[in-house]
Each structure stands twice: as structure tokens, then as C-alpha cells.
Amino acid sequence: MPVLDLADPAAVDRYSAFVRSHPHRSVTQDLRWGIVKDEWGQEAVYVEEDGRIVAAMTLLVRRLPGGFSVLYAPRGPLVDWNDKDLVLRILAEAQPLVERHRAVMTRFDPEVRFDEGLDAWMRSQPGWRVKNVGADKDDIVQPRFTMVVRLQDEDGRQLSEDELLAKYDGKTRNKVRSGRRKGVTTREATEMADLVTFHEIYRHMAQRNGITARELPYFHRMRRAFEDRMHVVLAEHEGDVLAASVTVDYWGKLYYLYAGSNDIRRSTGPNQVMNHDIMVRGLATGAESYDMGGVFELSETDGLYLFKRGFCKGDGGATEYVGEVDVVHRPALYRLLASAVPRVQRGRRELAGRLSRARTALAARRARPPEVAGDGGRARVLTEDRTADQAGSR
Image 1 (cartoon, rainbow, N blue to C red):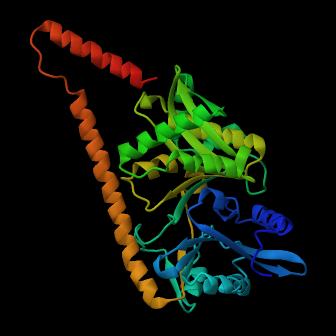
Image 2 (tube, one colour; image 1 turned 180 degrees about the horizontal axis):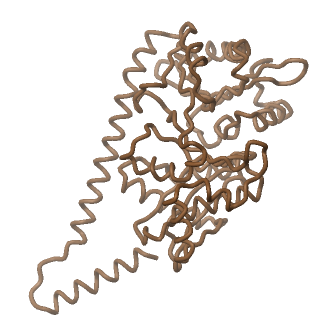
Image 3 (cartoon, rainbow, N blue to C red; image 1 turned 135 degrees about the horizontal axis):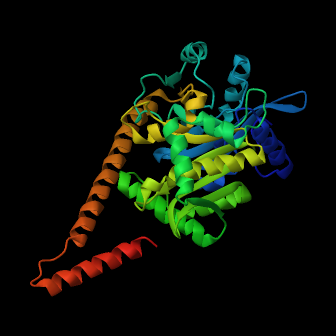
């Protein structure tokens, strides 16, 4: 059967072995990603030749009003993209799911480098809507540009730490070295309290930047899904946690999935030291790459892009993927959905920004000293402010 029987352990193990060994493998194509994204349904299809799997596609199923749905293969399908017939075959295997779930569209966005020939072929397919060059960030789910550091050379030899450092730009390399000299250290956290610490810092970062944040149960599900392949790393200085991150080692591909930093001693370079140390651990375990996540545009005014680019200089900066494709099954409903989703995304972003500004204003009002009479009143206020600062730095 081309549709995977998720209730058959042997079939699931066979499918998972193929997914985890594929050159284009991705953590979001793993069946266990469905544990993390528990608000979605999940399906999977594959193509078999001579008794072996040659292509696979794990799909998330998002329910829509009226009994319709959207099928989404995040970073899939896993297929040889030079074999166009095989690409069409794996998508055709999902047709029973299209009918079963009354899908409006099937969306996919593989980890495949942008190529003009591939782009032209995709655009020539009937019913395909290709979104890459010129697409607005509200039009696509995953950024097209991903910042990836290669941890092996072209012959598959593991880099040394010095070779890794040589790939960074000078500013980033200096930040790593000066951060270490200043006493910034990192440790892999294993206790539940450490995950809570990560989440507090991550939420603080989200509020500071006016973006939405995942709730703590999301990370509990991720740990349950990937167990010891999920790593929480904390960057510390003089007893304080300054930055924290969650990564997943997906069989040689390291994914830097979520991270944040607080506002304490940021000049010590905790984020630079933390990312470097994660990669050094990857070198020791034979990892082939470190995926720092995506950016929607290569802008010199985007601090996140500039931060990531500092690590990726030796790999040419951003890796450009082929983009996102919607295979449209119900054109009328698709047009409605395509017009509604960008408005919803903009609304969520604007709401997050307003909430962040409101929190900042409230914090500023609370920190503003009240009018007091006499030196004794001023001294009392200053003492209370110092206490608050110390409490916030622990």
C-alpha cells in the first residue's frame, strides 16, 4: 500500500529508517514530528521499487471548516529531485489522502537548493503555485533562505575546531574568543527546571522582539518525541544564565530550532559562544551540518540575519532553497484560503507587536520612581530598584 499504515510497527520502522537516512532528511519529515504538532493530523506515503523505499512524504493534516483540510509536507517530499517522474509519483501516491481528507491543497517546501531549471519545471506543472523569488514573508510558511554551517569538508572529513572558527567572519570569531576569556561557559541541561529556564528566556526574547512564542508544553512534546536527540543548552556567566537554546540532532543534521537571550551582560557574547560550542559538540559526534534556521530576506538592516551570517561566511552565507509549492485541488476554496492566510499572519504579527509594546510601557511605568519628599524617600526608592535589578539577574 502506498499510504503508510501508521498502526503497523514494522512498516513504520522501515519507513522511518528511510526518512532518517535520506540526503534531504529533515526533522519535520520524521513521523515523530507529529507528536510535537499534536494539533494536526498525520499521514505518510511512499514509493517502493524492487522491495525498497525510494521516495517518501510525511504529511500534516490541518482541518478546515466544512470538513475540508490542508495537507502539508514540511521540508518534504524526500525524493531525488533530478528524477522528475519520481517526484510526480510520490505526489500521486497522496491522491487517496486528498480525497479522504477533502484537501484544498497539498503544500511542500523541500530542503533542495534553488535551481532555475527546477523552478521552471515546477512552474510548468498544471495546478502548481510556486512561491519563491519575490514572495512576501506573509505568502510562505518557511523562509527560503536558510543559514547552514557545514561541519565537514567536501570529502566528508570532520572539521577541526580551528577550521570551524576560520569559517566565521572576524567579528563573530572575536566574539567567541572574547566571550570565553570573559568567562562565558555553556552546559547541556538535563533537568526539567533547565527546560523551564530556557522557556523563560525564550519568552522574554519573544516579548522583547514583538513575536509570538511557543508554550512550555510544546517543548515537553518535543522532548518526548526526540528524547536524547533533543538538547537544551544554557550559556552562563558568573552564575547567571544569559542565553538558552533547543536543538535536535537529527541523525547528523543539527537543527538550532529555538533560542533566546535576556538583557543581562549581552556584551559578553553569550549567543556567539553558545552557537559555537553547540557546533563543537557536533564535530565530536560526527554531525555534517548545523542549521541555524531561516531568514526571509538578506537585509543589512536585519540583526538576526547579520548574526547568523557571521557564522556562515565560509559557506557562502545563506543557502537558498527552491521555495514553497501549493498543489491546488479545489481552486475556488484555494483562492479564498490564499487571500485569508496573509491577513491572519499580518494580524497575528501586529497583535504580538502591540502586546510587546504594552508590556514594555507597563514595565517602564512600574520602574518609574514615585515623587517623594526628602532625601530619605529617594534613598528608599534607589534601594528598592537595586534589589529588583539583583532579583532579575538571578
